[in-house]
Image (tube, rainbow, N blue to C red; front, side):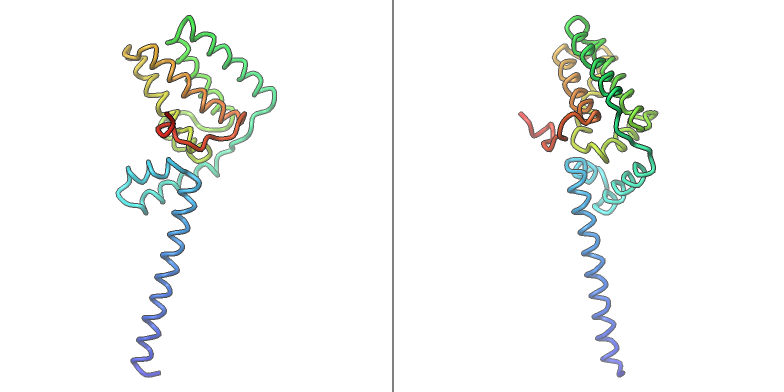
Length: 187
């Protein structure tokens, strides 16, 4: 084989190899965008580049695969649902207490399902793998709950927090189809 033919073969092989790598990265991005929805866009906006965002989301998937996430039993679901009814009733007389109870209940459900709950940021990352839309609700509720602890949340803010917690709570209990519309798009 002469040098020109060899160079053409090498260039062609590099072009094909590059195209295969590009296609695989593109498929990975499409998979992650489809799976994570708005969480993909949020992570991508926070990352330095698309590859870093994709690596972050893929690492979340792998971490959650190692966890022992399970569905709740019918008895657990009934018990948690009853506690949620109490939280909603409590809101009438004690909105601040209801938000604290809602936060506690959501953490309890996450623990029962098998999600680690030690660190809020890790918790939201883990939740985002299986609940990518409602994780926005969780962040919003937690921000209001923190504001409540600082004494700067209005009753309307507290009402919104309970609604946000309810969205996550119902999704964790798997009582309804997961939401497909991000909270910022609904109005």
